[in-house]
Image 1 (cartoon, rainbow, N blue to C red):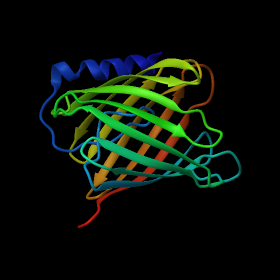
Image 2: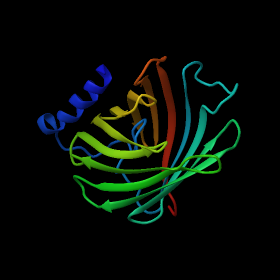
Image 3: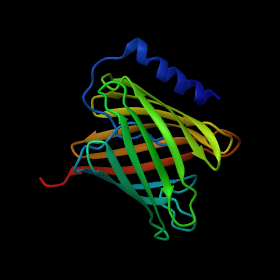
Image 4: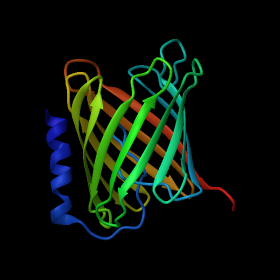
Length: 211
């Protein structure tokens, strides 16, 4: 509950302390956002997550490669690959409302063999500010869950917090460091019910085709 209150306070700060900003991370740790890769842009990410070692290929699926790309001005698509067994799931996002301040997007993720697709709608607020907030809904395992997040950028650092409702889901707090086309994220994950704290470590490269 304490982490949820931190996320809420982070979002409320938008209306009180926001100021213009040019750079930000394209995603949070847990929830999709209305951020969008422009046509021809792409993101390639390597990620490790879990509760124990930073890199552990001993079972399950804790290491991933993510490829996301902008198809056109409103459509984005991607492929998520488990590095341990090669399983893939697909995703797509459509920008319903284009806005520099408060965009709105809908999407579909976790589409693949043996996976249960998840649909969502998410809105962003204060995208022209240094403190941004994100609100949405997602269908997970047949249930509708609330999405809440916030991020704030100071120079090359972006501090992030997000939350998915439901006992089987999590909250997170993390930091993203950007240098040129590369970014590194480290975050802690907090289960909504009992359980150990987890982590996410992510390395990202953002580029543009046709340069």
